[in-house]
Length: 131
Image (cartoon, rainbow, N blue to C red):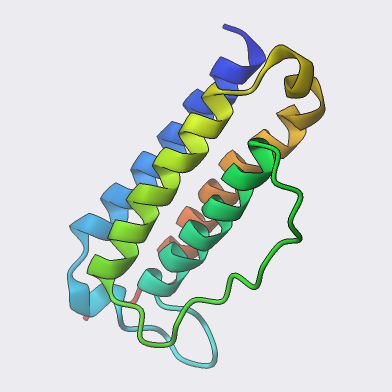
């Protein structure tokens, strides 16, 4: 398996796990946080979606600076799922479209997209308080 395919598989696995985890929890659980400024599961997913959109743009050649990826305070599970699914498709397409010329310089960045999703899946596991 070449490096791009391995990164794509890693990203897709993490993205799928994050979507499934959020989808399988109740809206009440996903939208309820531990307080103290800790994001809810829905907010974490929203943040991942915002970051995914930016990362997909960079992988496709957009040179924009990273925008603020702060989720809204009232993020809902269902809205976060919509954003997360759409942004995941963008990143997957961007990784798959890496040309040989551009790929070498972007492999580490693409890997960071996959690692970002995995870190936030772990964050959701720590932050979720069953309701």
